[in-house]
Length: 107
Length: 113
Image 1 (cartoon, each protein chain N blue to C red):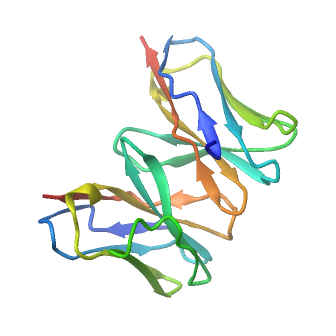
Image 2: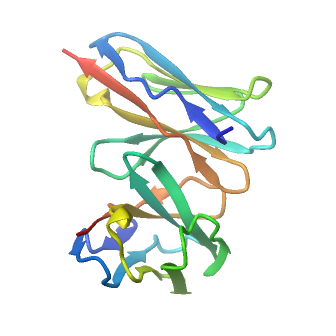
């Protein structure tokens, strides 16, 4: 089983829609979690850290469910510029990346 | 802050040649990571350093790959001899400490012909 698993998508949504996707992890001792965004041919960039109580940053909401070992990302009122691959990152003793979920927002 | 700086941005070489990729982490960051990304395998951790010491090199594909960090502001990833299957984007990233959020360089696009 992979350490971090994500639905690859793609999720094709219209502008203004809400899109949400999950990431599961295998190591219950994992301590910290992050969502990164990667645009085509660019480096991954930190989108947000994920805290135990869940956290929100503008249109983006991240949730952590330790009991079921998954984290989620929800994007509200999606914009064309939200089109990207979203990488889930889990810290056990090293940072493990998921393969990414591709989101395409259409006009 | 200049961010993580990698060079070269692009490298095209012939099979059998030596390739050296370079990375300057963010000043004050104590952890440095080398990743490789391909369409087939995604983002793979090759090796990481804490305080200039290699901690985990289990991701290094084979002996043709080696990495060094002679000081806190510089690291190299060397492939000798290079093979076409090494073609990928190689990212360097640094973090304040192990387990903290990573900051990536712009990557080196390597093509081995």
